[in-house]
Image 1 (tube, chains in turn purple, red):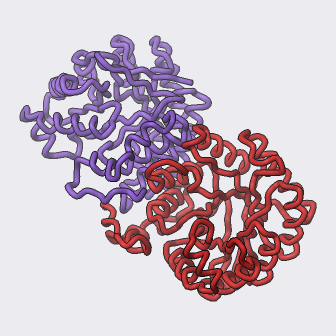
Image 2 (cartoon, rainbow over the protein chains, first blue to last red):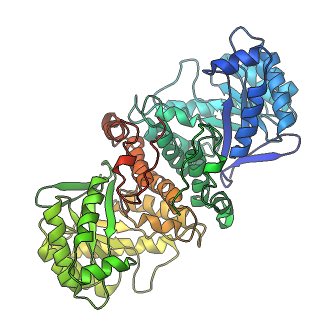
Image 3 (tube, each protein chain N blue to C red):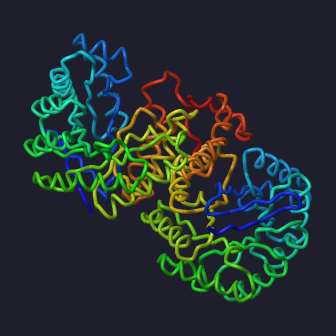
Length: 300
Length: 300
């Protein structure tokens, strides 16, 4: 019954075994989004603003904020993006960077208890990131790779998670503030990627007793109809014990799977959220902000 | 690694732990379908014919055939329906009735090794149905209720399943020929119905080592947007170990979840079925035979 509490100045979100699934919106990330990268670098944050508002409207519980732009002042950009997003919405944020200075600048700009994304099992990362987590009283995403890379053996990935949790404890960070990312591999390249990650999620929950998150859409990389496969993966991963995911809340089929999984895990009392989201024909479709064309209402 | 083999004269289908999920088409059933009931009673089987063809085209691996019409000669109707469906398609059939004489007539009309649907833990049913299963060398669906009704305690439902498997063994029917239906309750009425049935499915698979099936759509009874919830349930149940379901293959979102779950369970080598089903935009939609309006092609 592990609860990871994160917060903004005005709102608390709990990632937990007996809680509704937490969706961490992934959109505010210039990686692979050339236009967004150029705009942010030039000081134009209008798309960040729009992405923040749209993701919260679509049901994101937390927003991931990343400003990883080559040859830009990432710490300054990340701090700026965080201040902006916090001025627009009170959802807690995940501060996302591979640059420790950017994580630090983000934490300093942030109001509340952030989710820091991320630390790995690499020695240098552990030594630099964990003190920051402790200093700011944050929670942290722990990714299951270490100095030897990503192991294809889930037992080794489990051991990396264990090492990070133990190392965090050395710094006075409780296990409930470590949210483990088991690393989702593309099932198109590795047939047992789905089965393996579900086993690992189950072990992380039952043996290490930690909350988990993942970049859920990675599972379908390289396959056709990715939006058709991702919700099925998410449902299965939630059934296996996963408690949050960094993903795209603007995919309505994905949010439908999350809401459905909450019902089926008995995390939606009286099915109130499900009923509210599906009250009128087209209720799901009308929250869809991207793509222009609306889907026809679901058949009741 | 339990395999339940069922067959027609020309085709074998295996329900198994390491096999693609088996979809048993539920449509040929006059219960709640007034028009179909009237037509069948009057000797008009054109809708049975159409339902058989459409379900097989949509990807059903097995067809359930039920002729339960009040005040009709159910044994004769069921035998006639079975002969007709077997003349149209070589998918194996599930012979479905609550009337033992109809099950018997169905088995006599059937070519191959049928799935008999069903026996329960009720003493009278065990004594009348199991000898038929043995005599005809069929497999049988075992429903987890007994003379005391349906228990809301999954431990008791597990014990009923165990009793049926043991009783079947007394008649010389191996456990691999017993496919247990754990009974899916509506989650709208019973909040823990989803969690409980997933635990029961897991126990049936790991402890009793039997294949499982269920009437999957029952889970969403009474809730809005049932076609939006059922695929999520199916994905989670497959993740928990379920190996077949009696459901509606004409729901394209449901078949998409089944195909996706096969990929994620590593039961679709090289993702060949997934890729084939999603090769061209609209490939899923174009298999949809009912409802008139086609859905727009899935976004690639």
